[in-house]
Length: 346
Image 1 (cartoon, rainbow, N blue to C red):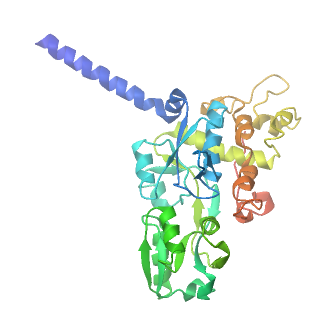
Image 2 (cartoon, rainbow, N blue to C red; image 1 turned 45 degrees about the vertical axis):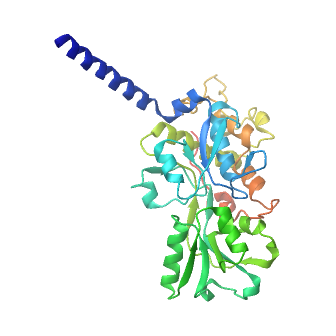
């Protein structure tokens, strides 16, 4: 009996050790082992995360996940996308169903603390607005008293809407629909007078309406909506990879490192550029910043080669040459008057 008991205890101990070892491996090791990044995105938002008929995804949020995949594997295709509703997105991240959530999600205190997440940065500074039909003759959100408003549940959008109307002594009738495409359809069919969400998404939604020119986005921006990717708390190694991927995209743009010139920039005499791209100095010493976060020396070069720098991602997905035609504005680099600013890689 003693032998059996000891054997059982040893077996339980072995299982505990194995479980602890698996847990300590962390997300980065698990991602490397399975060979791809599992990325949570929206169910379809033009400019941010949208699949085509062949399920090829495009968008700013999509490209960020591809940047992470490029940093790890040197291949932007090493990523799989999980379309998630606003209600399901946090459960998917908490449960480990996805490795990273990159889904027009607003950075708030509760999400960054009590909900157990960490935001890696603000990939898009936004604010909540309102879209209405021109035929209503409304030119201000302050004239929306009594309106029927389409809004997604379980979002900061819904909370902001309540706060704004209460603060201005107005009332509204909420038309609450979870699925974004159904929400847009309800507005297009006239089931509500107003559609409210982040301003960037309003421009995206307007482009998908039957007659986009019949609708206007009102001038009021009623909230701060810093949108960015997030990961689970308690995994510093993975958080560092995701966070510094964001910073690398900004640093690359600031230094003029582009998808088209990244190989030539490796020959630069500028020590900062060489350091960022993982090029050894005159004495043959490598910078060491990639290995410091579990990646190769040329991790930034791989990112830029895979998806470009932040400015290229912005222009390709939401900039002036796209249907959304969003100006850089506060999303410009700090040196150009914007808010995008990254710590140095050194």
